[in-house]
Image (tube, rainbow, N blue to C red; front, side, top):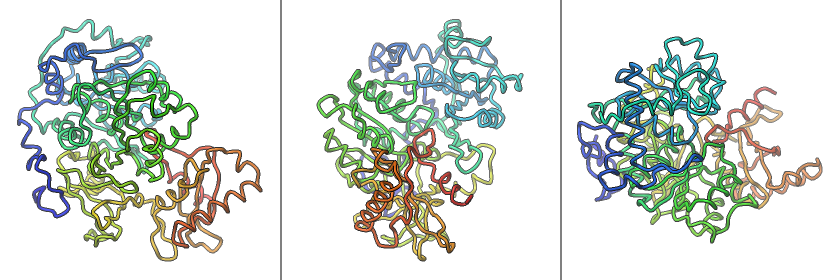
Length: 540
């Protein structure tokens, strides 16, 4: 089936009928994105800013070439793997693009995982080289001793007895050689979060990164070389990779990198010290930033475009952000498997409370539990077809067959398509509640809670009452936790929030219990881990 064969695929004359065919058969992403900036006269234009300074496109191209040459000097062959466990500094794009240019498979990993997670990833990827930040080295020290065939490169001041990143680059020749890859050659993997089991390595090819810019980055964000970008989501995250590398580099823009874990105060300081025009974050961060007394006001920051993904953006958060900063948040849906956003609001077609419409070049359909299409207005699981889909999960045929269904990829998300063609998020497939025989979207209940002025965050999960029946339970973080610190105050606040929900929702949907927390469990990318909250109920 062609991309134009589904009625839900929006017509757009700017989208090529065959996006993949627009990319040459002989293709290397790293060479493409570096060469286009050098040919455009941007050798002296700043590409990245990190705590060590500013780095031009010319300097980056030289570092990438040297890193590729250094890999060859270590005997690393094409299609072998390099595990990249680096914080967000210039070393990250150097190593990532250096691998891709040399035809070596880059495997960047989450920098907040456990030693056991890294043990699995090293064994699963059979990486020949580990590139690791000095600060992360202790989590790998035992694993390195278990892997004598592994070459180690350490980025930072302490080499721990291994090759230093800068020393290795300085010693290498600036070799302009590019591996003779095709657009379908494997370029990199991204491991999923592993929230439902072991992480899965989603395998992507050389063309995928460029396609995310051709279809989404360019048409939706409209970046130019004058833009300055910052992404709360880190580079190891599929969302952050597009935000902070693919999209700005495709336009010759500048990206600010922050190696530290982002906090509202830290990001507020960054926005005051750098003229960021394009800002990317996840919904929980937008909410926390709005609640921060140190957040800058409208006139202090030149923001012109803001993007959200990772989870659906609550309508109230989007409206409050637009009111304060004078620019809308474009809420979108992407995944590790699809690499970046494939369903999104558009700057000229935005409807808060929805995830927008399919990005031209992608097709979406909603299906029931039997895999059959649902009627418009009915809830179904979202399947997506598009050219950036991963080709498989590495070394995991069973999960690959469950997720990649021919040209379709299962998202695991439940959606409704409204009468105007906008898609409304209902929750993850595993998070759905069935109350009184009817499905309840936890996201809908959470949105009602978050529309109350006292609520910062909320998570709703299925909970069993005394008769063994499923009812919604809410875990709530208040802007002022002291409002629920005492039991009587907590009871009063619970009733207030329940009454608030009853005014906004059908009666059976309101949370029967509300538990106040100081924070909610989250993944490294800011997603609320509802499964951990559900586990508390099943353990009772």
